[in-house]
Image 1 (cartoon, rainbow, N blue to C red):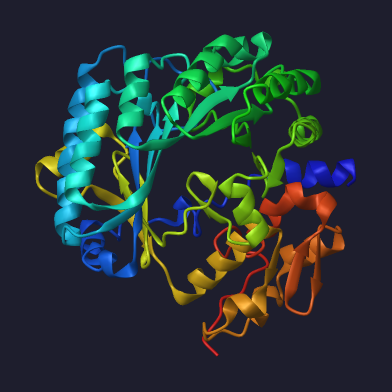
Image 2 (cartoon, rainbow, N blue to C red):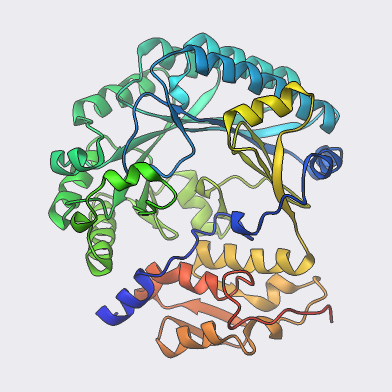
Length: 450
């Protein structure tokens, strides 16, 4: 792939497509009443996933794009968890108190900032409010630098079977440039403790495109990280958005790699992980061959949600906590971001929904196309539209963006089957954007039912 195309598509600001439509399309016209009305029918739609957002960290990492608050004190965390328990009660009541739960995911922020007893109490509240399946999976995002033995015990005692550890980079120069100092030994101790407690699946997060990062430092980071044999890796490109995340202004923009360098870093990380025995899953995940994520990729059952690539096959996701996004069959709901406003709404006995989006049938079709492209690098439009009432011609006709991708050799179309060329797979988000009716006013026409 030419440097011109790498620059053309690599520099574009394109969503990660962990949802469709993306949060940019959400509106305050969808609020607590719409959420409550849809929760009333959620149990009938099958088992659900639950996401809990814990927006606290002990220190700020300059690259961070999450909604989080820095606190050295324990009281704000405890107060927040009390509010979250009240939200669980509100959601459970609106849903009829009999919702089957298949997966639970704690994100942040740093969920492991909770005290062990606080985590146990929160899990007890969840189990009393919902009906957990016998083998419900529980995943937690962890900062290895602050993980302590009592917390490891609490995680294991409460059924946690997967832990995601932030690594990002082991290069001390890069770590200094993002204000996140973390030794290999800290990660090693955390992994050993989790495994000995019975946490069966470990995931590492790596980031490329960081200040002063080089291809060689990426190679060295992967080789070190792979020594610990986590079951999965998630590899993300740093998104520099200082206009929205003011702490990112502390990063020296001149030290950031350009599009070509970012692509080189992403590809060398992929190459090193594959040498170490990991299979590439979708755009940016890697897994050992016997991992469930690898099996899902082989079986074409891989899914994509707000945590990235996943084996989670639930059609509904309940989002709990400030800024959390939920997904119901009817659409998306997002809670208020400010902690005070989130807590205030719950104190009044109101679901803290700030905005959302109700899906049309066309949205659902486009979402299926985008998800298969992101997961499989191809999509059969005829198969995906079967039973939808739509003639898929509107997805490709007068679609200038798709035509440009074809002309650039990024995709091919045979009948109704769209395939991302193997050497251009890192551009798959640009292909997905060609089917995003909200991404641009150019290249899209809206359809009517056939």
